[in-house]
Length: 274
Image 1: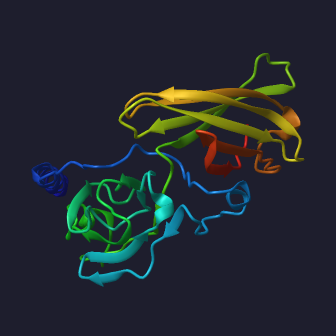
Image 2: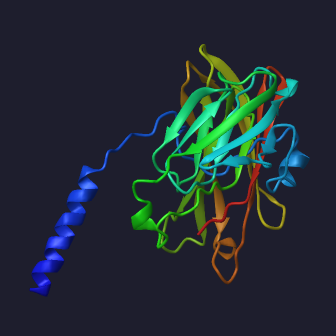
């Protein structure tokens, strides 16, 4: 009898879940790692999430129920650039509005997400609203609390150039089992938001933990309307500099985007290869 009751309860729960209305996400950018543009190489090296001319953390939220509101300023330095919003996480589904206009909807608030707000903002003061849709359809399954309070994680605004580094990917392989080196491959994903073909030069420099140069170079990339492509380069990594828990060797990857002779973003990463 107990087994039959458990089976009935499981079927009832599945039926309840299947009947829940699902509204898909809208307006999200493609997922990526933490890529934040800086105006100089020195600021990129010291960034660690600090504010700079192209990166601003949002704080001082005003909360009314499930609605979080913040004011932010778009400076003149962001003219002819993109404006992206990053939201680390939220306690449920949420909608994003900028200056009273709908920007996006996220049906998976627990995952980091980014939104392109370029066409909704203007120079000077702007208003951002993030409204959590309460109660979340899955809140009762994800939390021991019956009515968890609305929460919003870290959020920031950043302004990459029109053609910018969207993400960085790394992998490695070994040519022969007896080889004492790995071949590291670094992929630099470059995207353009322009409506016509655009050319930028991408510079890269990979430094070993001791500061010696493992790879250096640049490549001119031309992308047409709202496209993206990946610039790849290889480097030989000695076995002694593989990353592991006992010896977490990390390289330094410096990137720079130049358009029409002017540097428009600097980035720095610290990958490990294993």
